[in-house]
Length: 418
Image (cartoon, rainbow, N blue to C red; front, side, top):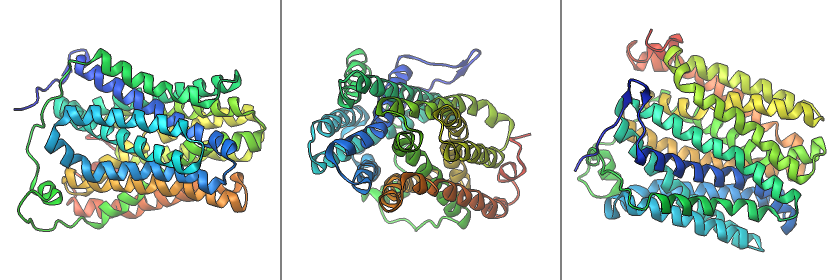
């Protein structure tokens, strides 16, 4: 069985009922993810735990992502995409309920782990199906789906901030993600996902333990440096998602509700950036866009870090989102090119890198903050961004040489295919 392809039409990317189901599935995950980010500092206040302990919730979420990356392919091969998609959705709901019901850190950490595993399963399947169905238009479809996710993420801090302000508590706001999942499952109950277009590659089969031994494929230096760049920008994204509201409360004297809603400023910029990213990618090279996106992010973060006024901090966070939006998808694309076209292997390695970055970045912010302050701990962000810029500069000649001056040149020269 092969997947039916749909693609760009005369009016742009064609969307059918299945496309909307996938978009809304990503939206439900995006609401949970960014709602989780603003909930952790509020949970810390309730449980009276340290920032290091609070940061472990991001680590638990990341461990769930790693687990899904290691076992997702086996589960899909055994049970099929439909079962795994809805199982992942159910796991995310169970995890959210557990996280919200927990009155001790041990329980809330388990909830974060379950929710992270289920959400990552959902997202991985959406990505695969989008690429299978849309072919060359797959990246555009993924960009649009990510915009739905970050768009829902804008709503989550606003809802949580509103329910906190009226006295209902942050749990009521985060539990909306469960209602969204149930609504999508109900509306699209009869929808079926297409089977993969191609069977597993020898490398995938070997990693799953289902195929004959295959030669070990070595990824070249340009890939691993790009992998490091990707890990840095993912760490920055989640450091901002989990700790911006805390900084707004401590540094800019905002109440808990408005500080939680302030994270929405980052997400507005993120969504706008991702919506514009597809068109910009047709005109400019990936490295050109990566360099300038990092510089925009550094500019916005500098203003946010230096000010003590919420009226200045919030626009600066919007600029941060504009710079941040394209970094992750462009870094993934660059890693595939740097891997010499071995996309399955490259995406698998970057997925593990994302899990490590999500776990380590917010935890380091919390650990440093316990010894100094959240404000001082946030200096980790520009350090990571400078490392990313250095990684791009160092790997650029390596990438051009490894690509033989062909496909890699457009990544170096700053032009996307002329």
